[in-house]
Length: 147
Image 1 (tube, helix red, strand yellow):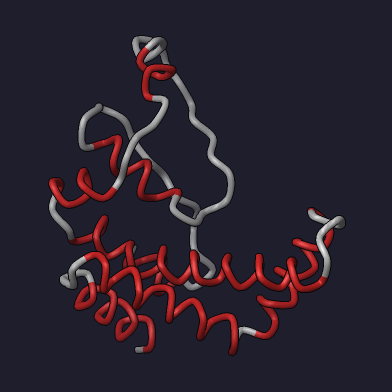
Image 2 (cartoon, helix red, strand yellow):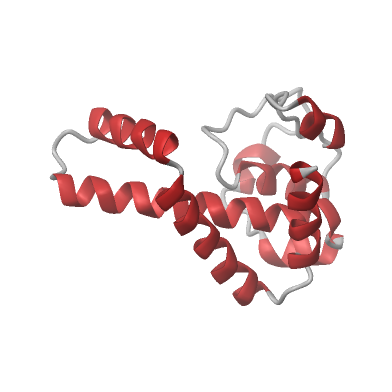
Protein backbone atom coordinates (compact mmCIF):
# COMPACT_ATOMS: atom_id res chain seq x y z
CA UNK A 1 0.00 0.00 0.00
CA UNK A 2 2.87 2.37 0.82
CA UNK A 3 4.33 1.83 -2.65
CA UNK A 4 1.06 2.80 -4.32
CA UNK A 5 0.67 5.88 -2.12
CA UNK A 6 4.24 6.91 -2.89
CA UNK A 7 3.69 6.54 -6.63
CA UNK A 8 0.44 8.49 -6.37
CA UNK A 9 2.36 11.31 -4.67
CA UNK A 10 5.00 11.27 -7.42
CA UNK A 11 2.21 11.34 -10.02
CA UNK A 12 0.52 14.32 -8.35
CA UNK A 13 3.79 16.19 -7.92
CA UNK A 14 4.77 15.80 -11.57
CA UNK A 15 2.13 18.42 -12.41
CA UNK A 16 4.04 21.08 -10.45
CA UNK A 17 6.09 23.66 -12.33
CA UNK A 18 9.65 22.41 -12.51
CA UNK A 19 11.18 24.93 -10.05
CA UNK A 20 8.68 23.81 -7.38
CA UNK A 21 9.21 20.14 -8.18
CA UNK A 22 12.97 20.65 -7.92
CA UNK A 23 12.60 22.24 -4.46
CA UNK A 24 10.19 19.54 -3.31
CA UNK A 25 12.65 16.88 -4.47
CA UNK A 26 15.55 18.51 -2.64
CA UNK A 27 13.41 18.69 0.52
CA UNK A 28 12.49 15.02 0.10
CA UNK A 29 16.20 14.21 -0.25
CA UNK A 30 16.92 16.18 2.93
CA UNK A 31 14.35 14.05 4.76
CA UNK A 32 15.95 10.90 3.37
CA UNK A 33 19.31 12.14 4.62
CA UNK A 34 17.93 12.80 8.09
CA UNK A 35 15.91 9.60 8.50
CA UNK A 36 17.81 7.15 6.28
CA UNK A 37 20.43 6.21 8.85
CA UNK A 38 21.65 3.04 7.14
CA UNK A 39 21.80 4.57 3.65
CA UNK A 40 23.53 7.65 5.07
CA UNK A 41 26.12 5.42 6.78
CA UNK A 42 26.79 3.57 3.50
CA UNK A 43 27.10 6.88 1.62
CA UNK A 44 29.54 8.25 4.20
CA UNK A 45 31.70 5.12 3.94
CA UNK A 46 31.69 5.23 0.14
CA UNK A 47 32.48 8.95 -0.01
CA UNK A 48 35.26 8.47 2.54
CA UNK A 49 36.79 5.69 0.45
CA UNK A 50 36.47 7.60 -2.82
CA UNK A 51 37.59 10.99 -1.50
CA UNK A 52 40.06 10.41 1.35
CA UNK A 53 41.58 13.88 0.87
CA UNK A 54 38.32 15.63 1.81
CA UNK A 55 37.90 16.56 5.44
CA UNK A 56 34.92 15.29 7.45
CA UNK A 57 32.90 18.48 6.84
CA UNK A 58 33.44 18.32 3.08
CA UNK A 59 32.48 14.64 2.95
CA UNK A 60 29.32 15.30 4.99
CA UNK A 61 28.41 18.14 2.60
CA UNK A 62 28.91 15.84 -0.40
CA UNK A 63 26.73 13.13 1.17
CA UNK A 64 23.99 15.70 1.86
CA UNK A 65 24.15 16.95 -1.71
CA UNK A 66 23.88 13.37 -3.00
CA UNK A 67 20.73 12.77 -0.95
CA UNK A 68 19.22 16.00 -2.23
CA UNK A 69 20.04 15.03 -5.84
CA UNK A 70 18.58 11.58 -5.23
CA UNK A 71 15.40 13.10 -3.76
CA UNK A 72 15.06 15.28 -6.83
CA UNK A 73 15.60 12.32 -9.14
CA UNK A 74 12.84 10.35 -7.39
CA UNK A 75 10.26 13.10 -7.80
CA UNK A 76 11.43 14.09 -11.29
CA UNK A 77 10.85 10.52 -12.47
CA UNK A 78 7.19 11.50 -12.55
CA UNK A 79 8.06 13.66 -15.56
CA UNK A 80 9.52 10.73 -17.51
CA UNK A 81 6.80 8.32 -16.40
CA UNK A 82 3.76 10.56 -16.98
CA UNK A 83 4.97 13.81 -18.56
CA UNK A 84 4.69 14.72 -22.20
CA UNK A 85 7.47 14.14 -24.70
CA UNK A 86 7.79 17.92 -25.04
CA UNK A 87 8.29 18.37 -21.29
CA UNK A 88 10.98 15.69 -21.20
CA UNK A 89 12.75 17.34 -24.15
CA UNK A 90 12.62 20.74 -22.41
CA UNK A 91 13.97 19.35 -19.13
CA UNK A 92 16.80 17.13 -20.35
CA UNK A 93 19.69 18.68 -22.23
CA UNK A 94 21.89 16.41 -24.33
CA UNK A 95 25.61 17.18 -24.56
CA UNK A 96 28.16 15.37 -26.70
CA UNK A 97 25.56 13.86 -29.02
CA UNK A 98 27.97 14.19 -31.95
CA UNK A 99 30.02 11.30 -30.54
CA UNK A 100 27.07 8.93 -30.75
CA UNK A 101 25.89 10.31 -34.08
CA UNK A 102 29.27 9.37 -35.54
CA UNK A 103 28.61 5.66 -34.81
CA UNK A 104 24.80 5.47 -34.66
CA UNK A 105 24.54 3.30 -37.77
CA UNK A 106 26.28 0.49 -35.85
CA UNK A 107 25.04 -1.33 -32.75
CA UNK A 108 26.07 0.62 -29.65
CA UNK A 109 25.75 -0.13 -25.95
CA UNK A 110 25.93 2.86 -23.64
CA UNK A 111 27.01 2.37 -20.08
CA UNK A 112 26.30 5.07 -17.53
CA UNK A 113 27.42 5.18 -13.91
CA UNK A 114 25.01 4.90 -10.99
CA UNK A 115 21.39 6.05 -11.13
CA UNK A 116 20.79 9.68 -10.15
CA UNK A 117 19.44 11.17 -13.36
CA UNK A 118 20.32 8.13 -15.45
CA UNK A 119 16.74 7.35 -16.47
CA UNK A 120 16.19 10.88 -17.72
CA UNK A 121 18.96 10.58 -20.32
CA UNK A 122 17.72 7.27 -21.69
CA UNK A 123 14.12 8.43 -21.96
CA UNK A 124 15.19 11.76 -23.49
CA UNK A 125 17.15 10.02 -26.22
CA UNK A 126 14.18 7.79 -27.09
CA UNK A 127 12.24 10.97 -27.91
CA UNK A 128 14.44 11.49 -30.98
CA UNK A 129 16.15 8.18 -31.74
CA UNK A 130 15.10 4.54 -32.09
CA UNK A 131 16.77 3.07 -29.03
CA UNK A 132 15.90 1.41 -25.77
CA UNK A 133 16.71 2.36 -22.19
CA UNK A 134 16.61 -0.40 -19.56
CA UNK A 135 16.66 -0.64 -15.80
CA UNK A 136 17.46 -3.33 -13.27
CA UNK A 137 14.88 -5.24 -11.30
CA UNK A 138 13.81 -3.64 -8.06
CA UNK A 139 14.16 -5.37 -4.69
CA UNK A 140 10.49 -4.77 -3.93
CA UNK A 141 8.42 -7.11 -6.13
CA UNK A 142 5.30 -4.91 -6.02
CA UNK A 143 7.26 -1.83 -7.08
CA UNK A 144 9.02 -3.81 -9.81
CA UNK A 145 5.67 -5.03 -11.17
CA UNK A 146 4.28 -1.48 -11.26
CA UNK A 147 7.34 -0.16 -13.09
